[in-house]
Length: 600
Image 1 (tube, rainbow, N blue to C red):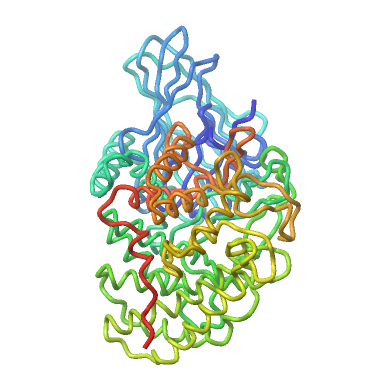
Image 2: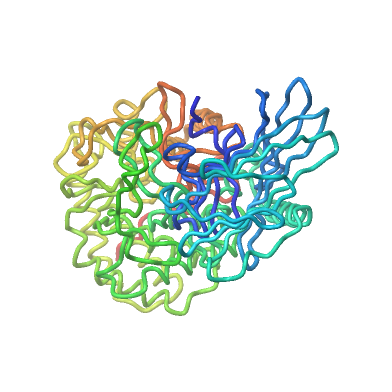
């Protein structure tokens, strides 16, 4: 039976990541970076597209966990003959990247089998494999992997296979290293030393977390996951380590999420700063400024992990997709869209960084002023909105709200930190945009804001209006909007982004509930004083995490399964921030939901 998305766990070295199934198969790994071509792509196809399985030769009972607050995965196999644990991890990177797998015997004797299928280029390219005295080397074009192990291996039908016994107290180790093919082989590493160093790193990092007691386990796992999705050399945070996991099984809502979205800017900063991770927050703030540096007219909504701008979207026809969901895409054409909300997210993030005392960036304010000058010219244009629709542009309410946020935070920064700028003109625009949204984005008959000017439809981004401070929570228009979303966007107690059957987003209708949106509803409940409802919803969402504490982008409430790319940074960011809202002395809902800048 094929694995579901929730059957996978994450390991990584803060530069790339792998997905390990409950069956002991690594079905996804891009080397050397998150956005590189996959050498194991069975996740989006079949074992023939690349995987590495280590598992008992006979049927076994399986349990798994992370070793404490680390990214070291332990999968325990138990048979009538014995028990053994498969330990999977990626050490923090030195000169090269390594993947370590150890099978540790605990009871009796278990016969294991391994099959290594290396396919570079997202499952398309069969490498040239040669034997070495301690394993093998596989090369194709620029890529090389080197396997070291004492287990006897043999080639069979363009695959590498082996079988071995593990007795109680014994350990069999495998180390797979990646390197450019024109350089010497990746250096050997000692598996036990690497395991100790990796455990030490993660335990020390996670011990620094400052979290509310009631949510500490789920929030801490989310923080570890977010750290794992951070590209250490630049500080960029990928939305997910995967591409094309479907938002609808068998459908075409399949996107590449191995990039960094400006939309995540403020949520990321607050999640990190409020839990004590100021170094990571500073690296993210600096990544933002480097990525958007240049003429503001060319600012994008997403970038590559080092700030790359050309993210050309392509389809890979040789991959059949997860459970037949085609096409499989790499790159993301949405990077060329106009999405006005990202301007507000960027400038809110820079304001929050100042408020929280991050050391100022030498050109941050100059960049901000240039962005505002451009935003003055375009704020009233239709755009593609927060959901990156591929239908016609519209005047999305949330997009306009976030342009208001851009001017609001800039006014506050200028006055609080004595920064020079045309504050009087910003105030005029700030007032004009607010009036425009209230006049055109609010439907008096529905007693609610609507997703776009001139429509009668709703979307979950409207839940963020009090959270970003556009209107105070006690404003009756906010309560009316929350009530409208409860009536129109709830499915089995969770929140849809919008109704794909009612909104023209350029794609066939149908998807799961978007998990971050349900956390936003919990945040709205908190601001409205509905604390018990917020806690109940938060606890339900935490209960949707898989057995190792991970969340995907979406959830199918009918079939009770994950949908979308996995693990999803947006979901885990929302979990951390809602946890802080519920029980932390530092509440993101208070930090962002300030009163509007006073008029003069």
